[in-house]
Amino acid sequence: MDLIFFWLSKLIWMVIAPDTFLAILILVGVGLLLAGAVKKAKVLLCVAALSIIVNAFLPLGSMLLAPLESRFPSRPDLPEHVDGIICLAGAEDTVLSHARGQAELGASVERYFGFIRLMRMYPDVVHLFTGGTGELFSQEFKSTDVARMVFDDLGVDTQSIVFESDSRNTYENAIFSKALVKPEPGQNWVLVTTAWHMPRAVGVFRKAGWEVMAYPVDYWTYPGKAFSISFSLDFAGRLDRLSLGIKAWVGLAAYYLTGKTSQWVPGPVAGKE
Image 1 (tube, rainbow, N blue to C red):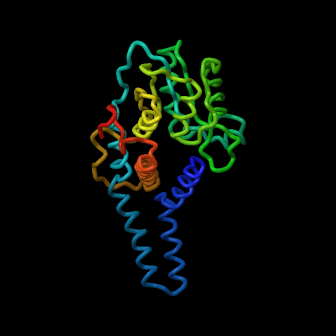
Image 2 (image 1 turned 180 degrees about the vertical axis):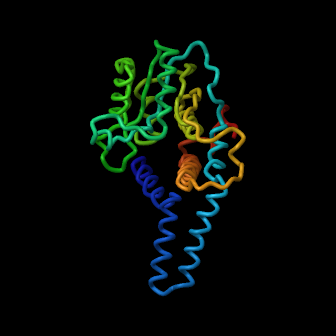
Image 3 (image 1 turned 90 degrees about the vertical axis):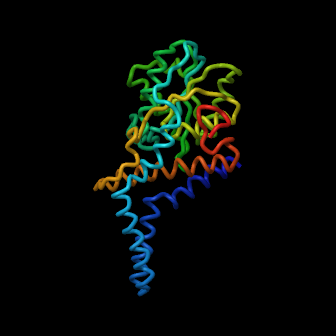
């Protein structure tokens, strides 16, 4: 069942992703135009053009991401005693890293910075890096392999880190990591991941019976400015944020409907939206 969920989540997102959906609208519109269905073509092409205009004036992606990024406090106060630090993979380009023979990272690289910062604050606790690959294919290339290269390059002792290499998504991050390090009730574990991803991640760990403290990093929005209307020619940037925003909310809904979380938008307190 988990394999089906993994494949469906990837395939469905390929179709509904804003950039893909916009490309489909344009291609179908042009096809209809060439086929002589002018009225139908005009409708689709006008919808595509309107979408571009709306995205240029409205920061839709920031509007979607801001509530999620504000769900947990930034740089929270942590207790003196911590039992472990967990970092979720997500910044790694596993295939390109393998092809080039060096660590290649994209967005979410701040997860490494946050993880290393906490490792230095709590040097004598469990340090866990979790993530195999989210690729449909090329499953042999793992995020943990890239992570080892990053830590080696930065002079971080990888012998002090526990690596979980089999998980393919957030749900498996929690399940496989729990089985690996066997946390006990009442322990203090800190979770590091991207701010907009934190609600879903906390919800999944909580559902798995593992209460964690959120340490969000990698913010995409400015406090209090997400709903400011302004014209921008950075269409690609805004489209990227829109994709992230839609993906975040679709992911929350999918995890909630399939029972992988107990709340639609998990927050700092269990059971409260």
